[in-house]
Image 1: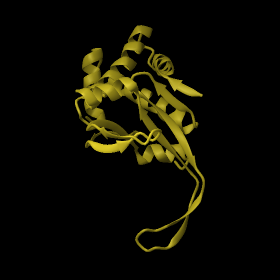
Image 2 (image 1 turned 135 degrees about the vertical axis):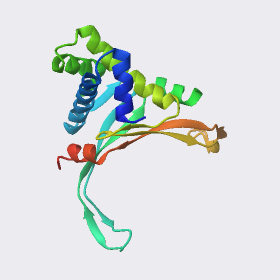
Image 3 (image 1 turned 60 degrees about the horizontal axis):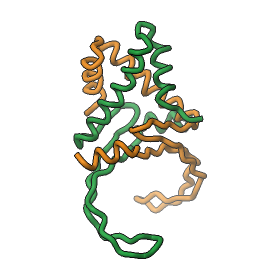
Image 4 (image 1 turned 120 degrees about the vertical axis):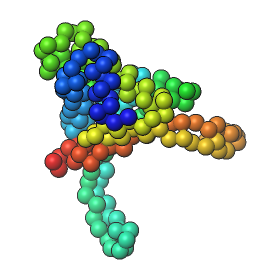
Length: 92
Length: 96
């Protein structure tokens, strides 16, 4: 399922115009993005949680050329599926 | 700080002044329910600009209890993985 299909479902479920459902979907995703950008974690019961992991700079290699390069410090989001969803995904 | 469902409801309520509080709650609940149903059906969830939730089939394998060293069989199962989109990664790293 992609975002436009999700919006379509949302619009039907809430009985709201597609334009409104799109805006709501964007509000939710933008708020989540903002939290992660601030380095905050997200915890949604029954769905899962996101945490930001920080990586220091390290020396890596370009796997194609073998050339040494310095990988800049970076942050990445990690998702851990919640108990309810994990069990349902597995049992269905 | 941790963002919760209550925070998402609050944001929806604040941004969409045509919605009642009950509708804001239902909006967030419906968003999560639809997302979960997709994954429970075994269908990946692609949210452009945010990331992709993938349902991965894992085969049964023999493993060990790391504490006791006992051998055991891990059954085949389905797990959910998340891959952040490039846009999300850039925002998190402040490069966009």
